[in-house]
Length: 332
Image 1 (tube, rainbow, N blue to C red):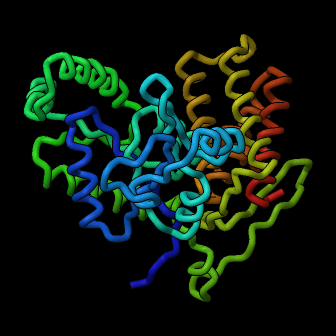
Image 2 (cartoon, rainbow, N blue to C red; image 1 turned 30 degrees about the vertical axis):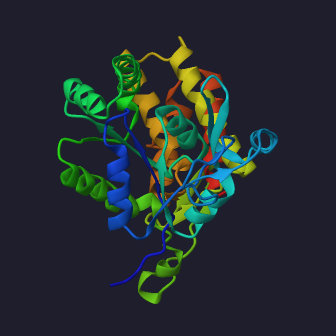
C-alpha cells in the first residue's frame, strides 16, 4: 500500500467533569500507539507520582509568564482564581505536526478555541457528552464528593456542555468501548482528510506528473490554466497569507454592510458563505488549486464580484482578493 506523507492531527477531547474523558483518553492512547499526549506546562507543584516531562512540565511563575509573553504557548489558562497557570507549548506541537505525528489534547472549550485559532486546519475537536445530566450527577456522587461539590461541578458541567456546538464531532459516552471506537473513527478520518495530505512526492512520480500551472494575461484579464488536483502548502506565517486572509475578511464585511448590492438577503448570505469557504480553504495547511481556480475565474465568486457589482469599492476589494489569493498559491 502506498504511504502518503501527511501533516499530523491535533485531536482535542473535551467533556464536563464526569463525562468519561479520562477513561476514553487512556483507552485511545492504548489502542493508537501513533497518538501521543500533549504535555502541558504548569506552575503548580508536582503531585505524588507525577514525573516532570511525562505528566506535565513543571515551571516557575516567571518562566510561565515569559512563555506567554514570547508567544510560545498555543493555549493557556489560569485556574483557582489565578493561582496556577496551565498551557500548551507551541514548539513541540508544531514539530510533531510537521513530522506527521498526531497529538491528543485534554483541554476545556476555551483552550480548544485558542488552539483552533492558532493552528487553523490542524485541529479536530470532539465533545464527549454523558447520556444525560441525571447520569452525570450519579457519576459525580459515586465518586464520593460531598453534595456542595457535586452541585458546583454540575453548574460547571452545564456551562461546559453549552459549548458543544463549537466542536467538529459529538460522541455520547453511554458505553465506553463504543465511545472509544467512535473517537478512533474520527481520528482515522482526520488523518486521511484531503487538506492534510502532502502529495508532492507522490505527484512527482511519472504517472502522476503535472506541469506547474501557468498564469497569462489575455485581453486585460487574468487567465489561469492550473493543474486542478495539485495541492499547494500554505505558509500561515507569510505576509502573502496575512494579506489574502485580511482582504477576504474586509470583502465579506463590505458585502454585509453595503447598500449598493441589489440582491436578496438570501443571495447576499450565499455570497458571504462562498467567501467564507474560500477563506477556510486557505486557512488549511494545504489547498487544492482547483478550488482557487473555481473562485477566481470569471464565473467564480470573486470574478462575479469584479464584474457584476455596481459598488466600485467592492469591485476593488474583489480584485485585490483575486491578486492576494493567487499570490499566496504561487500563481501570480
